[in-house]
Length: 103
Image 1 (cartoon, rainbow, N blue to C red):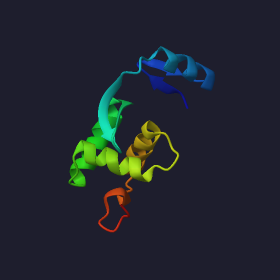
Image 2 (cartoon, rainbow, N blue to C red; image 1 turned 60 degrees about the horizontal axis):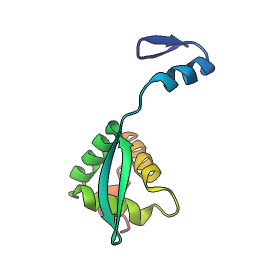
Image 3 (tube, rainbow, N blue to C red; image 1 turned 135 degrees about the vertical axis):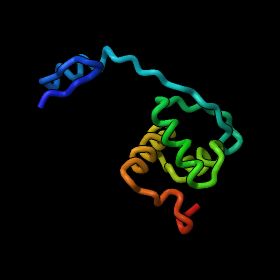
């Protein structure tokens, strides 16, 4: 089944890779202090929108959400942990903000 990316019809996987390389990725950076260290996270605006929704649903500030992600991410890079959370959330998983979830 052909895919469509920015009005370009794509029929082969290699074509999709070529088209995606042409689509500019706009990353938005946010700065945060985690464990006393200043850092920044660069994510696509769509991921930030989902994370902002998660923070609002959990009664957390943006900084509070980032702190909780940082505490739970283990060895996963912070930006990756943010994206994985956003994907889980959009898939319907609300366990991250559940009252009985570990902090």
